[in-house]
Image 1 (cartoon, rainbow, N blue to C red):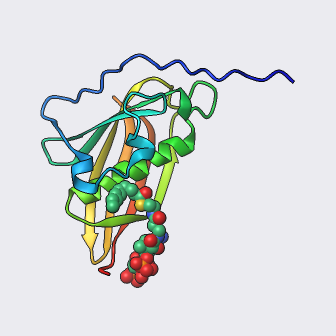
Image 2: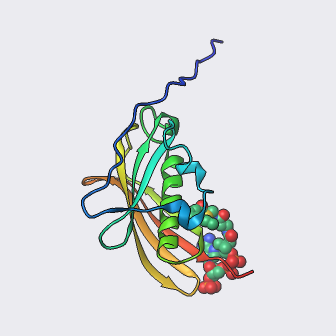
Length: 159
Ligand SMILES: CCCCCCCCCC(=O)SCCNC(=O)CCNC(=O)[C@H](O)C(C)(C)COP(=O)(O)OP(=O)(O)OC[C@H]1O[C@@H](n2cnc3c(N)ncnc32)[C@H](O)[C@@H]1OP(=O)(O)O
């Protein structure tokens, strides 16, 4: 059987700039440098991401799904979208002052997401009661929603 060659060419730079009124958000200075799965290769072929807060202080991300996130031909893998929602919505709870891990993530895939396109992740912390913090979010571009999620975050117990 013929072995398929892996394409190792690095994709060209992409524009991850935010919208008017957004301010850059430094995720590693809040949670450390451990979030490498999504954010760890800013010039690579998996994801490229940049975080912002909007004028309502909600976390936003501009994200490019590279060829290494492929699932259906030419489009992002559902797990790749779920990983992004896990990171961004969890981070949104941290950015709102809650030290959490994600306990439950419910994702609905609404449209196929074409690769090598910059999209937006929106998030909103909708409630915080006891140890439970609910964050909603979606991956979208203009009016098109690719995936939306409800994320139940649980605050970490004091050791
Ligand atoms: C340090 C920097 C981190 C930055 C992170 C940002 C983004 C990254 C996000 C992630 O990827 S986190 C990694 C994925 N998540 C995990 O691996 C979490 C693994 N699970 C756990 O560690 C524990 O199960 C958990 C802390 C979520 C809960 O365990 P606990 O023993 O502390 O809590 P407990 O089971 O007593 O539950 C507390 C409450 O939460 C509820 N709960 C817990 N897990 C739930 C769940 N999965 N679904 C629904 N409800 C849940 C539970 O019913 C209960 O409700 P009540 O108080 O009303 O009784």
